[in-house]
Image (cartoon, rainbow, N blue to C red; front, side, top):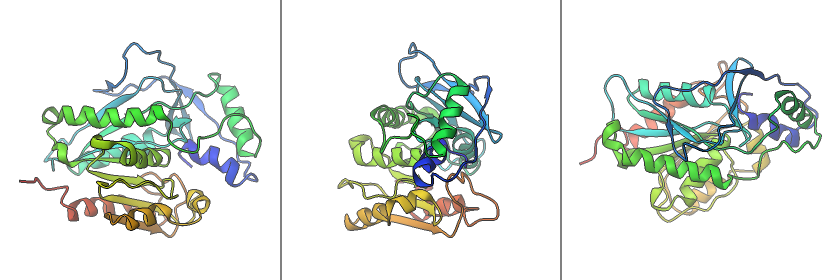
Length: 295
C-alpha cells in the first residue's frame, strides 16, 4: 500500500497484519517551480524516504505548491492534487507527482500540494519501528487522526487562494479550479468543500476517502468519488454516508464503486478494477463542462 494511511490505519482495522515496512532515507526532493505557501522562514523539518521504491515525505512543516502545467494545448481547467499518508506523511510520488503529470498531459493544469502533517519521530529507525509495531496492533503514538487537522485544512485553502490569485499567470480559468485528494488527501478534499466557504473548489474529487457522512454546504460543488469495495475505509464507514449526504442535500455526485483494488492504488493497480479510473474522472470533467471555456 502506497499511502502511510493504509499502514497506520490497518493497525486499527486488521491487527493481525504483520508485514513490516522499510523506509530508506533519501535526500530532499525539491521540485521545479515549487512555491512556499506559508512563512518561508518557518523551520524545515522534512524527512524524505523511499518505501517500496516510491518517494514519501514526512514531518512537513513548510507547505508548498508545485505547478505541473500542460506543455501542449490546455483546457483551462486546473486541479490541486493532495497526496495521502494518514496525515503522518505524504505519498507524494504515487499520489502527487504521477497524478499531476497525467492531468497535465491531458491539458489540465495540476498543482501538487505538500501540506503540513502531524509530527513523527525524527529518528528514522524509531519511526519505522513505531509504525511497524502499530501495524501489528500495538499502541505506539504513531496513528492517524480521526479527521483533517486544522493545519492541513489551512494549507488546502491557501492553495486554492494562491492558484486563483495567479490564474492569469498559470493560464487557467479560476472558475474551473478543482481539488483532488487521495486517502488522507480525500479527507482534506471533503474538508475544503465543507469548510472552505467562498474559497471552496469548483469541483471536488476525493479518491478512496473517508466514506462517512459529511456536512454538505448549500453551495457544494459537483463531486466525483471512487473507492474499491475491498478498501478498509469503506468497511470502517459501514456504508456510503458521503454519497448519501450529497444526495440528501440534492447536490451533484458521481460515485464509482470498484470491484477491487484495495487502498492506495494511486493511478490504478494493474490487474484490478482500479486501473483506468482516472479516465472516468476525465470523462466526468468533460460531461460536467469543466474542460470547456465558459462564456
